[in-house]
Image (cartoon, rainbow, N blue to C red; front, side, top):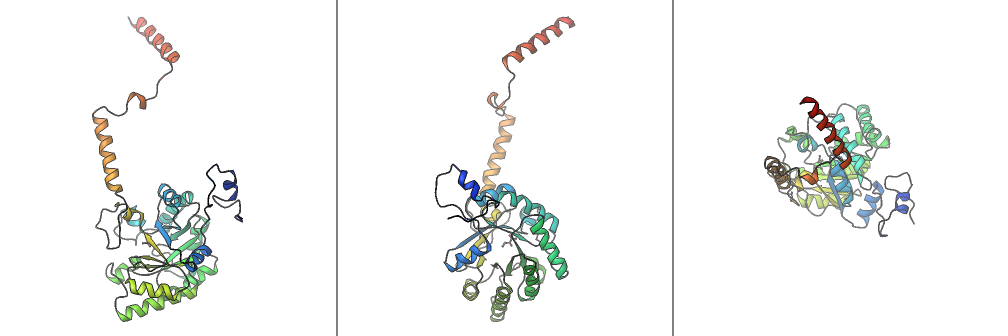
Length: 312
Ligand code: KIV
């Protein structure tokens, strides 16, 4: 029996009046359902989305988690890294994604500088993602040194996603985008990071750019679901960047990226074809044009005829 509230997006009332064939109703993914799926060894899927159209497509494809990643600094805004994107820019995109997502859990990245200047400032910024943009979870990069801060945000009733390993907001400290946890001390640090965030109560833990063996150990060790990106197949789920899987990044892909489509070629072909059609008078055709009704056309002819008569 469904127990969902009718006020929830895509909730029970909509299902009752739906004309769609009766099947398994899609459940709203919540923080609790992520844990359930981990316990039942059901793999989780997560993709980034940055606007209404991509959010709808991702959500309607039954992806569990939609992440408004600060990777949008590069994919959408053309910056060289994630550091310059602001809270206001992230909110703008999160609001658009919110309007496209009904079932997936909506996670938004807190950008660089939005949680580094003190706990109160971090909680204030995190609350903006919930109140103004409808995010259900905020993601914060960093390991054990962020545990207290993450507790404070969770205390404010805001679920937090952790993110450890290769954390792109630390690019200048790491000296580039380098795989983390390759040495024994690196592995120890990652284990401490994972356990600290798990104890702090993160809703999920993104593991980025670490050896698969280390990701497997972390996944085994923590109760929270791990979502890997460049962390091998033994995580509780996988996340990829929307633009990466569609070849829309204008850059050589990282080792872990798989292209599931070539949107760059699709878009380029369509744009060239449009240009060709305009230049060769193939677009628009008569069928693609609006027409006057017969009566209006006749009336117009009469008026024009009269005007020509007056001029003669
Ligand atoms: O910003 C982002 O897209 C991310 C994912 C790579 C996990 O943080």
